[in-house]
Amino acid sequence: MFSLKVEEIIRHSETISTIFFSGKLRSYPGQFIMLNVFGLEEIPLSLSSPDSVTVKAVGETTKALISIPTGTFVGVRGPFGRPFSPTNKKALFVAGGIGIAPLVFLNDFLTACGAKVRLLYGAKSSDELVWVDRFDEVRISTEDGSEGLKGTVLDLLKDENLRDYDRIYVCGPEAMLRKVLEIVKKEGMEKRTEFSVERMMKCGIGVCGSCVLEDGLRVCAEGPVFRGDELLW
Ligand SMILES: Cc1cc2nc3c(=O)[nH]c(=O)nc-3n(C[C@H](O)[C@H](O)[C@H](O)COP(=O)(O)OP(=O)(O)OC[C@H]3O[C@@H](n4cnc5c(N)ncnc54)[C@H](O)[C@@H]3O)c2cc1C
Ligand code: FES
Image (cartoon, rainbow, N blue to C red):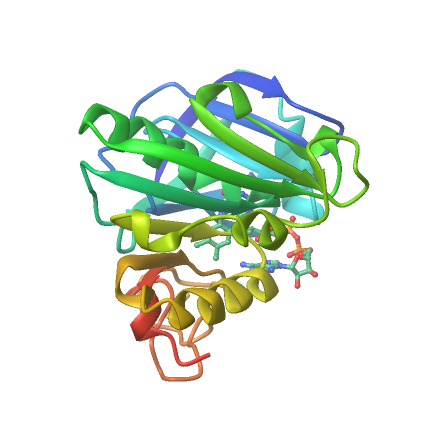
């Protein structure tokens, strides 16, 4: 473990912040770090850039993180895990809620590779939408209708011709991932679709077994990014 200083915080809303560190990590989009706030549990977080994480408060550690004072040191292990595979062609991103975090990093990376990225982004309400301005082409849905289409990101997905895309990248709650997998399978696109999967993690390095999926794959070691044809859901 090493320590990084919190250099800057952007408070997007009551519950979501981006925390920037003093140093960049050698990393690829889709990889995660194990982050330790002093005195609290260590948690996995995707990188939203080589020097940041974008966090939604759901429990003790994430609540502490979203308002952590600048200048505080946090413990970090990683980056770990299998990243997204790149494309320089057309890419569709499907994000649900805080699932946008790794896709912000991926957008920067693919755009630099010459890819054309389109984002479908669903959230509960407009105040949970973050980093929208970082994307050139975006369609939004909110469950309460406060911005974009009233509904979920799956409603946005219905309007897309999935075979137009070289790659589809998906991150969000598991129920959403499972439904997107069904949809891409019907279109024969599962090998060209990548999912960032979440599980409870302890070690983050493939040893403890706490993040194992139904088929025995470890999210921290074989994932967290999996192709659709690798998931047995
Ligand atoms: C690879 C990976 C990348 C992640 N990236 C991000 C990210 O970029 N931004 C972000 O805000 N969150 C991310 N998470 C989720 C984050 O790790 C959890 O929200 C965090 O561990 C919760 O800790 P807590 O102490 O605040 O809450 P806890 O009190 O531990 O938990 C609060 C609630 O969240 C659930 N929960 C806890 N950990 C997880 C988990 N790993 N997966 C699913 N549900 C969980 C618990 O069951 C409980 O219902 C990621 C998780 C993984 C596995
Ligand atoms: S978190 Fe320990 S095996 Fe994945």
